Image 1 (cartoon, rainbow, N blue to C red):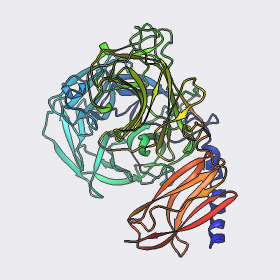
Image 2 (cartoon, rainbow, N blue to C red):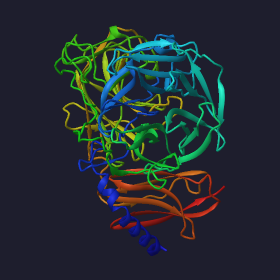
Image 3 (cartoon, rainbow, N blue to C red):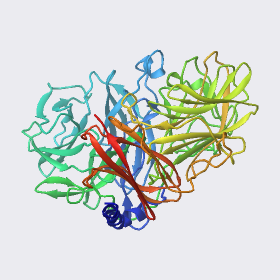
Image 4 (tube, rainbow, N blue to C red):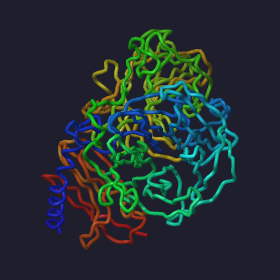
Length: 633
């Protein structure tokens, strides 16, 4: 049986060689050869809506409780994107946006509709608690005017018709059309035009009028979500429905919810997201072909991974969205990204967790540094104001971590203050400094519990967080010289928890647990994608660099319903870890892809399997090993 499985592995490996070559260490979607690789942005920019104005494409995405928020990106070719503006600087419609006894985690701004009409840009969105809002501007760079509407529309799709009438499509599973007046107040009753009939959860409507048809471009959401089009020759229906793509693509999750867009040369495309697990939801760019007046997405029903770039009439340079920040760039105009000394503007890659207290942070009190002063007394990071967040980018590797390093001065902390670097979702974890009775301690906190602590006598410290997309694990370490890092605490098992509803983020923070008045200065924040080693403080040896392949016995064994499998990889290469029944039939893929040297852990879930003996096998180019496990229900 081993030989049978081994032959199957080599067939699979040969078939995936092109994919392996395409997913190397790259920083952007554009491959530089006329092709691109999905996701077109490998980070958390969900619920995209896209429009073309003149020769520029604009995209808006969901940011929920992060401010400045309602991020708008721009592109000239649909592949290379850059920051344009954050339309909403803060929300002043509830104390919860100030973390004042309540919060807006998993709430806030959702699924914005972006339109351009008669020289003005429009953003229509809903918050689950405060209702509907409209942002308007004459330039996408802003300034944007924010107005609260008399009512909200769930997942709105704003539409300006040829006759001057304004409509919005909205709803969850029951899709309605409502006519609006010029103040964007409902002019008519909600008209039910379609009820989802494939499964519950039809939402995310975008409205288009193409060749005499009204189209509602909608999704049946979820991890296995898929996209449909509804069409009618009357905006009020009746509507026909067709699945335009139902494919889990290269990430193993459904390609769904996004926008249709036509290029200057007449090509049709869809910017449509794909769930990426703990790192959030990633926009992909899919070709669209019209078949019998239906916009069919992808190629032959499948989402594309690597594909030729859109024809927009000319070539544009490769762009990479910024991440690192030295906090000491020269002053730039207000509409450009980048930290600025002598300015109060942060780069557009940054966003605060809820509304910030603008009096408690500064780029000018100590020029060249970001100063975070404690804003209020709280008990934990989730309650802390002025936590500065940034999306985590995958950089097209399941194996290499995305690494964040910060340098900070902790000399002005007060007793009870906690400051450092976090990976934030639910659960969250961080490495930081806590001052207790005049002594500074490095601490590592995981899911609210302190996992490790050590006293230090230093004013300057370097913290590092490494987030692994392939394993959804994050590790934390510290250094006094930015050279030798000491692994600290344990690993965070990152999740995409709906209690937060955004991807995991890197965070810089400083909060008080006793009294306010302290501050820390962040010198810089740097992102890299590299395989790094850390020193274990207990053993004084390189950590996570095994010398041989290893496949551990699962634990517990027997088990019900899940068990853990540890394995080690001594050299980079293509690895599979799969489970089989005694008939050599594959029942689960625990990992499949390129791994760097390290120690790993996988979970085998037998919830949907019958009791019995199963086999699990670790395979590499020059290694194969199989062990038994027992599922006992």
